[in-house]
Amino acid sequence: MKITTVLAAAAALLTMGAAQPGTAPPTSEPMASVARASGYLGAGLPDTYAILPPAPAPGDPRDVADREVFRATRTLQGTARWTQAQNDADQAGIVKDLACAVGVELTPQNAPRTFALLRKLAPDVGRATNLPKDIYKRPRPYLRDEGPICVGRTAALAASPDYPSGHNTWAWTVGLIMAELVPDRATPILVRARAFGENRLVCGVHSLSAVEMGQLNGSIVVAALHGNPQFRSDLDAARAELAAVRRTGPRPDPAVCAREAALDAHSPF
Image (cartoon, rainbow, N blue to C red; front, side, top):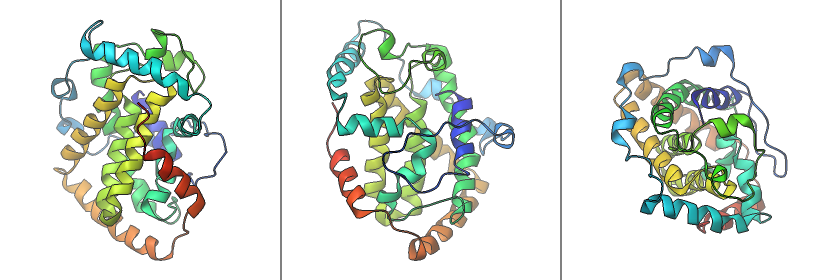
């Protein structure tokens, strides 16, 4: 996922509502106001290329494992986890998809400060992802091995390198922040954020190593964000906002949440 895609996700956060099971993921485009955003970190963003391990080289043990996991997980086509992966292909849906984990449905209307916080940090996530992606230029797994994927085989998807996963960098960044905002729900939030990223592996559009390094990449971004005074101030405001929303906000469907928890409890590989 390139920076423009992260920005598209942030733009779509402005209009995302509650999860609607069974509906197709919406398509989002970057808004001008988001595309011009500079994020929180600027020059303070850590060098993720220097921090992350190198991408697997063809034939090395990590590369072999990546290819084996890709082939093994193609059997998930048609399962409930495959359907969830199709839903999670829309990275803009991360907040609505955390509704069960948080325990309340969040929207730009009832949680504007929280959505603004996530929208502002999107450029930081994008830059943290693009630097190593553009250096390693590792092809996505379905371009190397035959097998179905859960989304369309577009030219844009093929042109965006595999390592690290920007989708999982975004999901884990949001998950860590939401876990901090609602600490008593940290475990289910991080379980769902992990599954959101793993579903890129289920989908067949990222390798195992790319998914794992997306998680590390998100942790790098969040660690750096905590050194920024404006981020910490905005985080405090979002925390107070969510405390109020949790007292009055709409609750997600318990049946939907039970099915989701059952899926997320099991590793797809």
